[in-house]
Length: 197
Image (cartoon, rainbow, N blue to C red):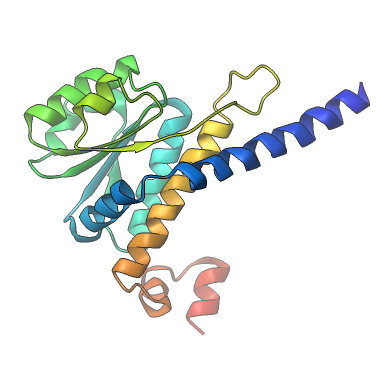
């Protein structure tokens, strides 16, 4: 049993490493550059997703705030009970769904379209409702999830986070974001102490 456990651990790491490599090899740089340009100048940014994709979308919203790009994660549950009132015409709304047809997201996509939001879809399914409704699609590339059953959002989660981190890196360069800017808004923790000596 011990040998099988070790094999599963190493195989998981290998699969996720390959997943990020696949994203780097197949990334749509033209779409990424358009997204970076929009997010670099938007007055506010909204992210939305369910499940593990929701955690990735939450992290993206927080990281955007860390580089002074005002962002809010909109929970699908709250969105369909009035939260969609936050969305205004022209707002970039980043919606994440590997399959592109997550039930909870479908009415949100439709309302964002009706309100004239700029939808940035992150999905593996290019023929999905999300992809077809998006102004820009950032394709996910996931050959295999890393858990032994190939069921859990593992590789897909890591790939999504890596994609979002790459976008953040691009925005930081585009906006000429520097240590002094980060120091001002990050007084806490070890990073805050280091930057604010």
